[in-house]
Image 1 (cartoon, rainbow, N blue to C red):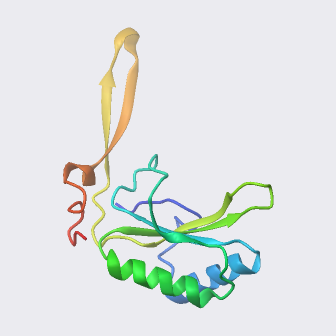
Image 2 (image 1 turned 135 degrees about the vertical axis):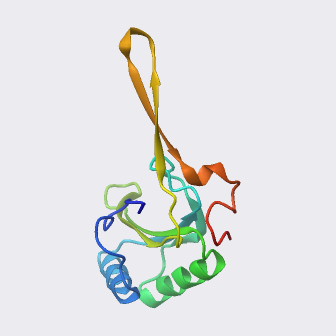
Length: 142
C-alpha cells in the first residue's frame, strides 16, 4: 500500500531532478524549507521528527537538496518529507509539503470496525507498521 500524503501524493515518485525544481520554485516564492522524517506516517501524525532547523536563510536549492540527501542517508528506511512555509499571513503556513523518500515496503493500514449501542458503528485505522517497535517498523529499519 502506498501512503498518499502531501501535494504530489497521487503522482508517481518524483525524481531528484523534479524535487530540485520544486525546491527552486518554493525558494523563488520566498518560502523557507524544512525536512522531516518518521516511521509512523499515520494521517493524523502531523508532527514528524525535524531534520535540523528550518532553512530560513537558504536561497540556493543545492543547500536544501544536500540536507535531503543527508537525511535520506541517516534514515534510509523511513519516510522523509519536505515542507515549504509561507509567512505572508503573519504566521508560518505550510504552502507545499510532499514525501521525498519512503521505505521499500509500506505495510499499509487496517480498518477496525466496532459496533456500539443504538446500532452505531465506529471505524478506526490501524497502521500495520505500529505492530513493531519504533525503529523496526520497516524491513530496512533505521
